[in-house]
Amino acid sequence: MGLIASLPEINKRAASVFVMHEKSEKLIPLHSHNKGQLSYVEGGIAYITIEGRTYVVPARHYFWIPQGIPHVLRIGNTATVLRSLYFYAHDDPANAFYTRLGIYPASELLIQMINHTERWDGRHVDRHDYNFEFLVALKQLLPELNNEALPIVLPVTENDEMQKIIRYLERNIGEPLTLPQVGQHFNKSERSLSRLFRATLQISFLQYLKTLRMIKAIEMIVKTKRSISDIAFAVGYNNLGAFSNAFFEFTQSRPSDFRKR
Image (tube, rainbow, N blue to C red; front, side):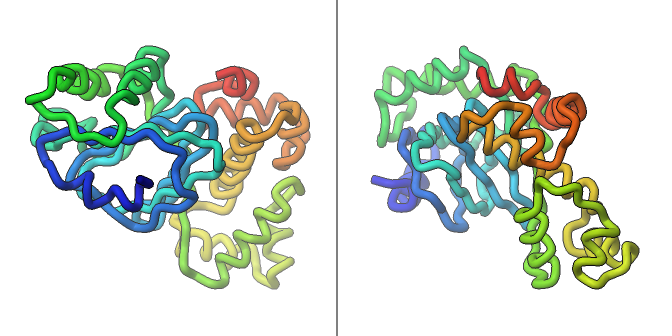
């Protein structure tokens, strides 16, 4: 049973933990749960879109989505396994962690604990089951990991003019893109193009471009065997040190270390 077909089942028993491990569908359209969702991304990249913002979840990271938040989930690699636990929410107000979306690097301990739950795949587990306390402990562990959430967020928009500009940036990501050059291509002044970014995406041109480059770099690191220097040039950096520093700012990891993980 895929995730789309399982959505009604997830919500059936509010006091349980529903366990699902699967090679997920490419796109799970807008939906929500009456439970908090913990998902570990194994072997690829996931994208979560909430209220016009797309969050990037690289391999060996996990995300938490609080109960009741409508979201779209897209998987960027057919080989990706999404290991998900849908937790009861009655105790969520006890810790702020459970009330906000977060994307975090997964520790070896957490990975092993999540992998252990595969034996209960496709089942509800509640207080009547002997293994329920294991899942309770796993949930309680999450706020204690003290991880900083990844700031890899890319706004999206329905504005037709901005969508054309975004597609242009994506097609030419390896070029030395600048505000004047992009403005000239679209017959817009620097000032009007800058205002368009702020008005439709609530982000500056430079910050959007930098984030887009980091997302494309993460995709190449995860999906290909290209060298780090080749990837740096492919996303528009002509200096490997500058690329490494920008990558660290976004992921708290150097590109080579990120690939090893």
